[in-house]
Image (cartoon, rainbow, N blue to C red; front, side):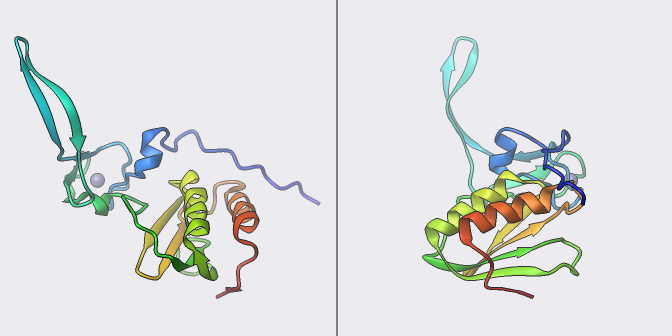
Length: 169
Ligand SMILES: [Zn+2]
């Protein structure tokens, strides 16, 4: 019998604030090159201007990838919904690989608090996992199913939080 592989966050996965922002260029997949147009307030000083508030931005702010020059709204450069408002209840879905052939586990009526927990579990494994919110479903997708232990770690955490999925299709 083989021992299950313990998940370890790959060294090349982004860290820190990049995890909260879940920034990824939709065109070239770069995590490191995305810029957003921001608003800020600056104080005039003898040396020039001194930013004292901001930078502020919204999901609709203009963004550009410095690597491939792809442009669009910031919301299109994130793997998790920004400033997201979760519905009272929604379906929670996990697609176990992004290749279109993997099964999807479904929890049909998940309350907002559990949905939030499930989303934060998924976000802690970004960029191995992405998420998309629609009116009635939060769908997370395992983007890097080949990372050792990733699927088992995510499945264990979700089972602990939500119980077993109602069905898998
Ligand atoms: Zn790019």
